[in-house]
Length: 248
Image 1: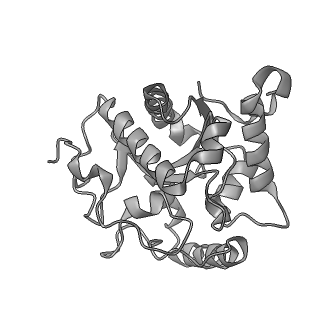
Image 2: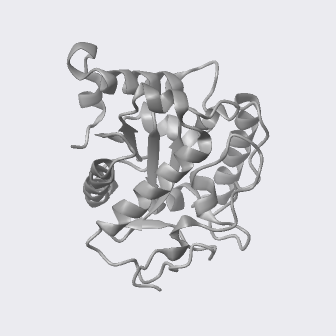
């Protein structure tokens, strides 16, 4: 089920438990006027009520992957009616034993397993215009013939607070949203500069070297989906390298 802002505001601690808490923590993070969240477009999307939300099971389970696939499929069909700053925010039920014991690298494995499993459940072919090789600068995650940028935050991230959240969470943004954002080159460049300034003040570690712009020859989208809690470049091989899409 996709939730809009009104439905999320109607959650209660008594009836919705962890879901209520996850959204409360998210709202506090995005609406903080002193400790400014770096992604300015995300704060705009939240403030305007253009986000859509979903809840999923323990991210280690096949059930969670199926829920991710279902929610992303529903979102993709309707996303253009939600507003130009829309994203799908997915909160995963994160047991305390996972919060306390799981490392950043273990969360990274969970993240990629979810994306791979969800993609296997997609009944649409990989888009013809998107390369099947994730080491091509134009590759990005696709589902239901839609292109997406995927952001992940976890409880294990500590230094990189822009990627920290008390629950395992994904924010999935359609490519068309990013295309519209970049339509005015001057305005986009100004906002990107402001975002980087905010990152410097928000994180206790430098701007990650994998951050780049889609389409640049030295850019790889998959490396930016899950950033480490340090400034070490991501592994040289994407987990999607062995995925058999219609492009391979």
